Image (cartoon, rainbow, N blue to C red; front, side, top):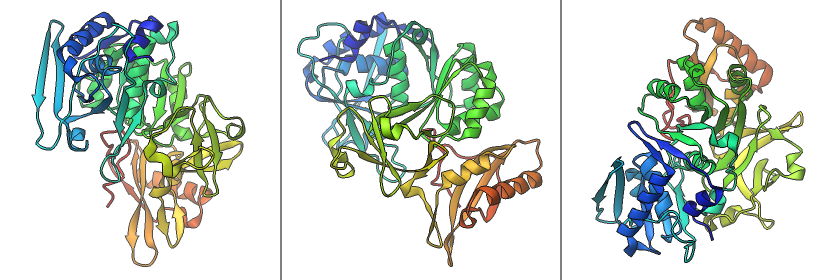
Length: 447
């Protein structure tokens, strides 16, 4: 049974974590993990919640706690509030190479326990730690889903080319997507650079100085970076998209800017983990995967046109109601087959009801984004006493272009590509769109 520390040692990798003020080697991370395990040895085989402060502290915590504690909850201080009662919260921060600052805060109704797990001590008596990750909570209270180290590192790889990469993480590291970036950097021996600011432009400048060559972000994040006109300052070799439906215009733009870069769209979810990776720079995925599978996963489309996936790893028991008799999980993502590809339409729960007809916002957005000059768009329903809802589109365009011409082109494109009930009745020009803390287009602030 392997722990994260032993996995890194087995792979003989030497990752580096770079924060705003310091650089931390694997040797230092492992030594700190050993000290933390000794500090909290009384917590062996007990549950733990690791509160994120920065990537270096978080990495030490993962190396320390995995294989030592029974359960590992990854969270922010806010997310810790959603863990079931019976926990004490402890946040650990590294402020310098020679000093550890441990800051403890107790909640009246919770007990979040933290412990230290050595890196590289002994592989005997290793505990099969359950890693708990929270959903984004966009539809209510966050839900916690369990994973194993094996399932979380199923798609991570190590090679000389991968170890030479310098990653930046735009995701929240305690979420599934952010953890995947961190684990990929650690287990491949790459460098990971923390963002120095919450300001996207300042972060891009910081990444340029650090020579970041690998970046993972949602499509909404990529569009925001494209709007800064500073993306080319990054010498990107590896581009990853995930978390939202990926449209062809965005893939084409990134391919144009970085013709020699590896561009990959990852389909994954917090509850099920990584499903598959599309690397051919085309939206959707090949229909042949429905027959032959992809990687270690099998795919089918059910009678409701939902994509179902059967991963090789064991899924959280909470998902039992969504798993059929053959072991396929209902992803609740609706898809369509067209021209030898399977395209994502969006979440089944996100459809707009227009006079009894279902409209997928992501489908309409994809059509509008294909119009030259459109930078970002959000489609949503506006209440209507007769039809239930009307389709509305908020659009961000290049600042030097004329809105009347763009709006005319959008209407023409929609008439050609969409059914009548799918066509927005109102187009609104706006300066910017809100992106949630998880990097996804915020759909909770519709007017």
